[in-house]
Length: 440
Image (cartoon, rainbow, N blue to C red; front, side):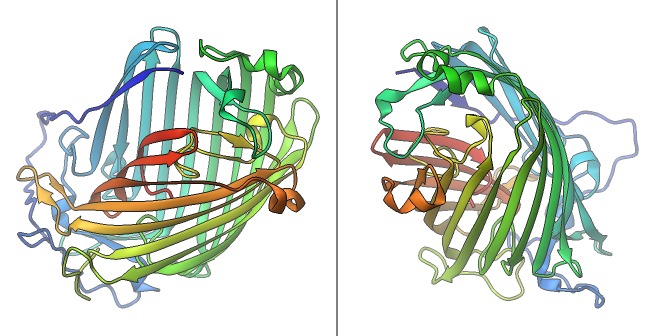
């Protein structure tokens, strides 16, 4: 088995000097001493005012990403020391106030490299389309309607493939190296007005996959174990077009406390360099139920982002049509599905998955680290994931039932800036996940 040592470090950084006139900034503006944020009176012409998120002026510091560190920008140094990928590291940067647009733009940047040549360079950007500044210096933003773009290159030495179906044993593990270049753009819009329940999403993207022999020393290379599958997937260029439609009553897309969602989506490879045509279609559902507070007294109606304990439920069914390389087929395992298994542990032409998660607040008002930096909330989550994969939708009922369970810590710097550490347990053992955002 491969051995890895990951170190998640948050380092304190100092601001940089500026030749501009100093901006008067009060880190407590718009917040009580204990961190409570009172929701202001909103403009009377707003459609769906409950769907607009408020950010007080104390959470909108001026300056560079270094000046705003741990308030609206987050740096995650990552260090690798692993037998099969070498020694190296990099940095992941999340900026929820990219280009100082007062929370109208978001960006994440990842840069990593190891001595054996594993590397990743990725840039993701999002801009919200409904955004207003308030007289008190704060802003409100309708989080549903946005446009986004992504560009990236990665070379991963340790991709895993176990074969097809729900009954593949852990002993079937193989590895391959994947070189992936990608570029994409898209948008999501609420209809007919900002904040409405109907959501339309669309996107277009390009991908190129180059494969080579695996570098995990303890398991076979995928091209030896599955030569035809591997050869058909190597050197494929793809142009993807996606379309989604959902009815979504949740009060937030990032950290919902109530409501439900039902959606349909398709992602079609309208062009593939091997002349094949294929795609994915699926349906999904979510329900969020607020529960009585376990370790706190809860919030109040006039509060922005009140501490709320919830039972969150999610499920989806997805299936492939036409011809697709094996890495594009539905799979389970990783940071969002069957969290006790590693990425892409189970692969098939159809997949079904469900999750139950009890999220509860352990520090309802968070804690202040410095006069500017405050962690807004500490939460715990207990989860149970279940699902299966099969050769077709009709075969899902006869496939092997899979499940995993575990718990995790969530710490948030604002409602849309949540970091998650989950540990899942399964028949294969355990899997540790450190990632930005909720599983669903």
